[in-house]
Image: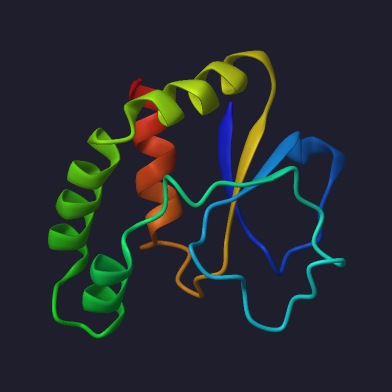
Amino acid sequence: MIQCKRVYEQASPDDGYRVLVDRLWPRGVKKTDLAYDEWCKTLTPSSELRKAFHGEAIDFDAFSQAYREELAQHKDEGMRLAARAKKQTVTLLYGAKNKAQNHALILADWLRQL
């Protein structure tokens, strides 16, 4: 199972394997305070794509399509996480405020399809 959770939410035993999927360390969180098992920068949106989306140069649909194209270049890394998710819960941790439109949701969907 793959689920998404903001880094600012309390960790729980149901989270399983916790993977930070932001390219930048989340603001206001000390590295010693965040419960996570892995920081996977490989599967994060490129800096250019992230800046275009947050700067509102592209909308969420365009961001989603471009991000999926980037993810296709890292299928091996995706397969590794997808395989883990078949054995235990994997929680993708992200810092974005918007819970409905963020890269972690796109990543989770992509991983489920592998």
